[in-house]
Amino acid sequence: MDNVKWITCLTEYPPFHYPFYIIHLLTTLAQQSWLDKVSNPAQIGGIETSILDNGTGRGTRIAWINTGTGLRYKVVIDRAMDIADAFFNQHSLAWLSHTGITPPQPFSDKGADWLRTFGGGLLTTCGLSHVGGPEQDAFGERGLHGQISNSPAEIESIIQPDPLRGQLEMSITGRIKETKIFGPSLELRRTISGTLGQPFIRIHDEVINRANTPAPHMLLYHFNFGWPLVDEGTDIIWKGDWQAREGGINSDIFHEGNDFRKCPAPLDSHSGTGEAVASIDADPDSSGQCTAGLHNAQLGMAVALRFRKDQLPWLINWQHWGKGEYVTGLEPTTNPLVGQAKAREMNELLFLAPGETRYYDLELEILHEKATLNDFLTKQQ
Image (cartoon, helix red, strand yellow):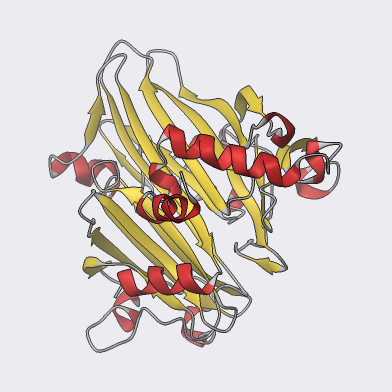
């Protein structure tokens, strides 16, 4: 395959859809580039596990993943393999709350206790059986956003890249349980992967019902972006019909005539609990893929978040512009933020049969080269 055809393949098949032979070609070319120049693959990138030894996160297992492109991020193994810090070159991508990383607290599943352990970070997983505010009904009591993020993972495998052998792929896989005697008993098998030399984060999740009775299932990926990526004038990117959450000051931001896709300066009205939330019926492309993201023209970079419409049909946009708490969330989800009880009432609650598995695939890409950045922005218009 000549160079022109190779470039065409990369354009027609973005990394989310790479066929095996393209991965093989990428491996071959990269191997030639590094041949005889590297002793230890860790010099270029890879996965390094560690344990925090100070502060509120003391004793918490983590894994730093370095893609070798300037994109590096911290997976918190003891917190459902969620992602805390994330950087591209010198720029932070994620919002970190005052709380920071804490060890798992599996009994923080009542009322709003979830907020006590919500460290923000690039990704916090919500579910597996409830997403939304605290509630109680004939089927039980459920705290804010469920309990999975307060559960540690059992690591199943870590695969390191080795460019000297033509191996550019890297991944970490673990199992996280949300279970109790008599059920429900759900298990999340998560793989976070990447390719050395590519500024991507790929997440493949499998949720399986291990019990012998049907189990309700809701899932939300709470991606939290912060300064300097999020700043005055940063564009928030998504497509679809939207509806502001009822009550509060949601309609102060999300109303016709207001440019709610442009990040404002910090707002006094968002001090304390001030926030605005909208549910978006995300528009897919011809392949069934939805795209959301952020573009900071001053930094010359964008973040693209991709997910499947048939897996995650909804997107939540959370905007919290408080002073010192400046963040926006892009949150692909199985349901709007109505909670399990309302979803059940509306006959929109998912149930997993005994032994049934549902699959979820997401990808986050950093765009910083002019051609790819312009192409991305053009497609989002």
